[in-house]
Length: 183
Length: 183
DNA sequence: GCTCTATAGTTCGAGACGCACTATACAAGA
DNA sequence: TCTTGTATAGTGCGTCTCGAACTATAGAGC
Image (cartoon, rainbow over all chains, first blue to last red; front, side, top):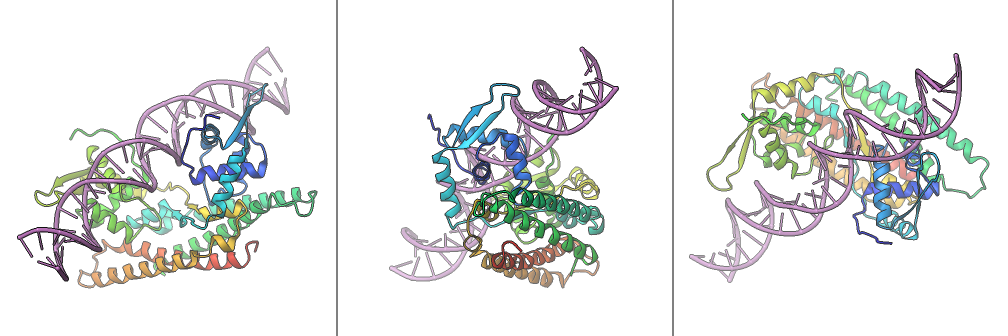
């Protein structure tokens, strides 16, 4: 365990949380799981799921194995060290304030017409909303056969619901903003 | 004009928009102007205001001069090339979807108690709200002596108002989420 | 076997980030 | 005048993040 010391970023914890939920996962599994849960609150480009686990493994937070046939995919699991680090982070009170970025608002700042900038936005958020509602339904189907008390998926469900509420709110705000940018 | 060609990012346009509004500005001016307008929609660390203008100047989008006394600060203005690039971007319809990141929600995903995670958040947003309302008031005082039709500050005002609405909404959402995470 | 499409994985260079630090201005008190 | 304090202003640099462009494998249907 030649654990090179690295800085753990929020994205590191995202990967570790996902792994805690899934048990063992390939980068692709992680990518999919993120899309179906916290993507709305922590967007991560897919290449990160190939790079970050390798980085975490090198530092001893994950263990790695390789499939012997086919694509010879890498499978990761949390080590004890990883679990510990994750728990410590999750239980620490200090949390960075949330951030919002919207290129459209910058264009408005630069003088663009809000109506034009936000024309397609409502639909985008409506599509996202439908997608999330689908995930939530799937999640609830899958949960049925499990033991009562089984709660590996509880976090995923809470964040999905929050994501759904978030999308609904965005749809409303955008409509209000288009109607009356200085209200 | 040894214009090295660079990629213009959204942050580049943020800097250029600010410069268009201010006319001429030092990095520090840019930093302050951002804080009082679009910070909520495009957070930028302060070091960027020293690095990015230099990069843009090298590529011919800004011109640079240096104060001769004191801190010998650099002052930037948009070149014609810069104005053009900015206009083109502002008028282009394609706009990246907005992004939201919230480390707290990740902690909830990882199993943390929403009540604990979001305990101080409401206050944070309330403070931010008050800050923005102050900026808006200042902006409106300053606008009084200007010519009617003068609208360099209109974008700033619109984004400030949107920022204020955003903070109000966050305060509400957080309260609702704490009360009932799975509503 | 071939071809199409979905799925899965990789490389790499440029940009973004933020800690830690340095420097200047200016006012108040000793 | 000298020192000290504090707000203002600027910098260096290593690490992390991003995303375009690309490659590879699997499985379905002919």
